[in-house]
Image (tube, rainbow, N blue to C red; front, side):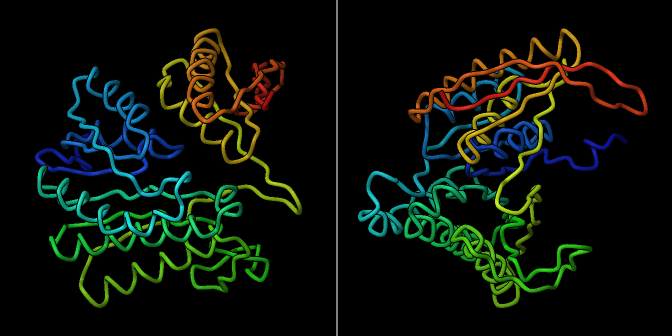
Length: 295
């Protein structure tokens, strides 16, 4: 039995929100390979359809459905759309007989600090809608990511325990702590099986250091492009690393695709290639690093 067999989702229907985002693209590919009918949902239907089309071209069952969890151009109207959103989610659940939801849709740190009201509405009210639908429809399981942003300066930095001080200083972090508590409440009160994990990051005082996006010759172009675009939106900088002609080719194609994604958001980027030495199992190899910054 293979690893994929152990995680088989055949004859299941799974919905993934935020599927066009940084983590969503990679998770969409992994979930689709597990064999379910995968319903990917996002505010950006055009970008979402690209995800669905790519997976469908691989012979996998993926359907794109529009799901607006927050329109930054119309914050004042967002509250009025909350009930409409829930009705839309209920329709998607009923239409495809969904029993599992991967809920990744959110306003991230940078945008959340610029518009904390929107971040709360999307991250918490959106999650509340998902949990309520799960409760009413008796769904099997909900997966909701938390984040290292749930911690704060009072949190121990070394060997951080699972149960610790959670006093974040950003609205994004506040919504992640609230989301964890809300999930725990729905599990204990209503038996909704809600699971999540705190995604890590690399930080130092005053600045945010972003992990290098490492590309292989067999990396999926769209997944890498989504990662580049997501990191650029969040941190305004990305480093892409590749070793070997095939990997470099994939990295360049992904960068071109990511440039198109970012252009839709009004972000123009430039790329500067560099040679870097990397240590792989005790051997030094030369890699190409593509340094991506706003123009």
